[in-house]
Amino acid sequence: MTEKRSEYIIRLRAKAGDLPAGKDRFLLRKEILEREVEEGSLGTGKGNQRWIFDARVRLVSDALRASFFDEAFLEFIQAWATFNQHIGEQDFELYRKAMMGLFGWSVEYVSYRSKISRSQIDVLFDEYELGLRESGLSFSPLYKRKAEVAMELGDLEDAKVAYQKFDCIRHEYTGCEACVVNFDVHYQNYIGRFDRAIVAAEVALSGRLSCDSTPVFTYIKLANASLRTADPRGVGWFEDGWKRLDFAEMDPLHKFYFVFSVAHNMEEKSDRLFHRLVEGHLKTRDDYDKLMFANAACVFFEKKEKKGQEFLFPSSLFEAVHIKNPSPAYLAQYFSKLGEGLSMSFDRRNKNTYISARSAEMKKMLSAI
Image (cartoon, rainbow, N blue to C red; front, side, top):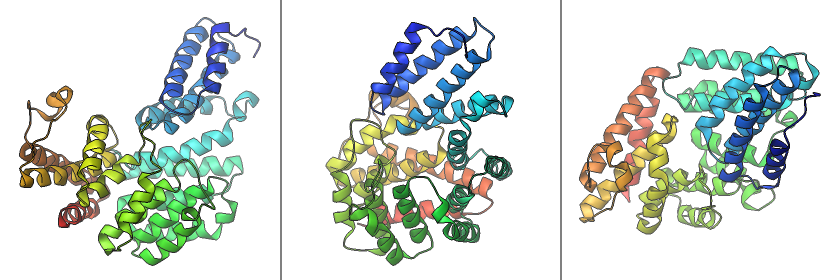
């Protein structure tokens, strides 16, 4: 890498390094990549290609931290293609471990898009497994991702097998320990062992383990599970998590808190979260996020209609819902149809009725209180 670096790009990179993770750093990373591509087009050396690749990998990482998942996935696909073109080259091999970490995330992400077929997901897992093997890395993240995806696909037995394989070698896992707690909580809830989920959560709730999403995610995982089990601690878990929520940036955890606030008729909180979430969830390519939001929004507006409450829907989104000044009754029907369509799409892809059954159960629970 002997090509001279633009002083402007060097300054931008230094500035990005000083910014905290979030939207501003993500947007700066986008500018850096654009500048690197522009500058790289003026030269043909490997240094140019490596700097573009480096900028793209950093952009993916910061897009994930700032919850720009669609952008992260699209940029990762390009980064992975570049990485494969330079396998064995030292400048690129330095990124192998980071690329495998991002690959694991991307495999889970595609399961949330209903138009991605099961065979395509299987191909991605095969490539992920090959990459881990060639890198000499543990299969522990592979089994963790397989369990997570199997749970989203409604494959209970596959989820159990993958979880057991992960559990046997969890000591080899080098990722975030606190996130593994949330994974354990999710799995135990999934197989109907709420008691075990509470035990698994204790290490996070006690403060012994924490990260960007823990224990905020842990609290809401337990709170939402309490909607099914009628555990009286649910509201307390919600409130403990709510106090720790970050409203300065978009956070993927907001939607889980929206679900619980709708169920327990916390109108001030649910109104705030709806306005914060609606635009992103109407536009996202993540069908699972959109489905969860649509189910909760449907009940949110059904309750408003029953109470005779008006609702000021954002005028910037009139086109998205096909009408000006929509009433709560209209919006309840709109989000109901949106959720039903997405559920059917997932069921066709998954070759079962797990998602539609879970959606119906979720709406019933949210309406019950």
